[in-house]
Length: 488
Image (cartoon, rainbow, N blue to C red):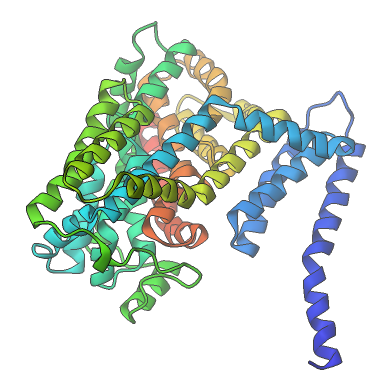
């Protein structure tokens, strides 16, 4: 290696370190210049903007989020960075919601892994191969499965992608397109169905914020379903894409070209799957039952335990272990190993989601959500409120990746505002839920995006970038719908 080459390599290696040092100094300086008793105002937007910029440059979501977290802590108290980071990490990991997410993702990853190693997913795919004769039929089947698995977006993202990726590979459909179809039938579908984890959560949240009297949260949620414009728009767009009526756009076009040339899995992603020669062999019908029965138990148990996917996953895992052991498909040790390996596979998605919760906590301390809402409140009118609520809250959820947590902060502001302007409450709730679904769908580090990419076997940023044009199209349709509804 020549001296010049070594110098260039060393310079390239030190560039990220230099940039990080300059950013840290910049955010620390801004914090020192900021009066201690004043709100952060527009400064509260800086960590989220930094996350987006670093993500676009690096294509690495976890590192981008952590960069924004450190920047936010420097704004809050640059002299106490390590202590603040430790307290924030501990607070997030002790949060009941993140604990639930860790356990659900781990259990779901383990269950899917056990189904794959038991040959059930392969049997299910093999049965579909005989009936699906084209790539379009395969994508239509994926969409239909997404509509059927409506109880939770986590279940949708992992189960549907695991059962369909062998088929999409067969017809040279990119993993990015599979992830897009799966993600488009996850959160957008869950908000449209009153028997889902989203409905239960938001119905309770509406009652807590006096949007409706006690016990009427679910009724209000059901009344708002026709007004959840983004959910309907996302379903329409994914159907048009699957049918070929909307062409592949930008990065998706490049991914599909690569898949047609024989490379369905993108660069940088390990070839997933197992050695099928080592899998247990069963009849097609028996394999199908071994796949569908655990899924049915998962859904049924979740509904029985008041739409709690964690309890459903526990029951389904125990049921699958008994079922497979009884048929001698796997030993107890093999099934435990499959569960543990599945949990390991989910560690990166769990880390990204946990880091997203850290961003949400930083933004709450900086007052970002309240600042954005208060900044536009003077310009609101009854006609513009639904569209403005969707646009603002969609931007907040996109920036924070927290499709649920952000509404704990925003609902106490938005609901009284809508009541004071005498706006239809179902329309307001429809705009809020649409914003939540858009943020979950479009944000590159939201739980739905991360799990869809993980289940489909592509990178998180690859999925987010290929999906974004379609999500933005759905967002434009939603804004137009809310403008029409507001003026009508």
